[in-house]
Length: 318
Image (cartoon, rainbow, N blue to C red):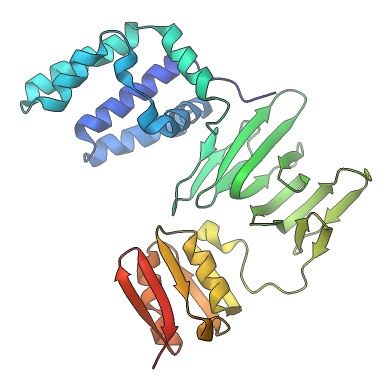
């Protein structure tokens, strides 16, 4: 069962918020009000996420009567005219075609995720059963909640689930179905595998084929791939630290460290062959990946070669 489609009225509210932010998007108070509206109810956030994913594809001009208001909104330099246009457009949306809205949401429901984050973004959501879901950078999930099941489908990226004692929570990944019981765990869909870490509680791995359960206990880390499930004896990075905005490493290869930082920034980030195996230990803040990179020459015999802000290569210090 797919996640319920947002109510047309809620979608209209989401569009109005988008229009208000378009008008006065730099107003901190307005941004806070919008955030409060999104966090107030699950369906608010779901409608916002779907409209956000439509992005440029959602053409408000397709709503009958909206074209003139949008044109006025975009071209008018007078605040009064812009307010009038905004009011008009809001009215058009409110009394416009609910059928159009429903059809548009249905058209993208197959590919637009219920929850998602962009590059460098991390967000937390409370699920309908009270569980806490945190999404790491560039991640997307769909929900399938009903009286019979509580299922999160991880489409790509990484999530952390904190589930309560009442019911287990299912997480479908590319490599296995996970079932969490009162605790906290992370699932990360890497290039060719899914990595699962449990901080407390326990997680059952349901693998297709043999029907047997494999249990991951508190403090364990596992790799799931086409060849099977493998427990990882050594971890060179704290798998939970990203939820606190940190990368915490212990004797980690520089190439692997840069691969993690790359997830949080746009553009090219690489290193020369002679520095790939340098080792790095420390605590690094994710809030500013560019500033984080500037710390590397202070801890390792390397230099940064930077062609543009979006092209950075780490090389051996001559």
